[in-house]
Length: 158
Image (cartoon, rainbow, N blue to C red; front, side, top):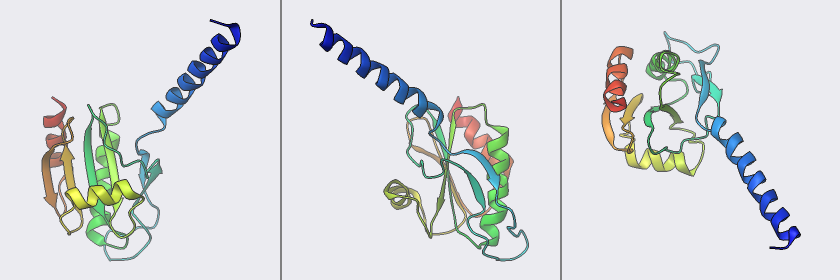
């Protein structure tokens, strides 16, 4: 093989490895926290109640359980459930769970709209637990206690 062709192949492999290395850590929603100023006592629109990094990554990952959280800005029940979801995220940061947050009034992209079409039941808040193969293991409309969601996630992690 000529030297220039070998250099090209090595250069291409190096670039691909660099892209894969950076993509691995920058995928799923991360650093989840409650938005400052949300209300837990009235319907006040302060925006979607959860902030974080990579919130627009709503792709399902094979081999990883997922928690889908559907909510809306300015909804008291969404805000209260958002606190539970953030608490659950903090408790499970070391486990292979992908947290996917979807503002039903403002879906981030086409993938979010597809998840809404396939899983959303039209009420907020709404939570769905998917197993490692992407199949629904649990879903619930309304507020769900953190312990209940934790048990459902534990089931799909086994």
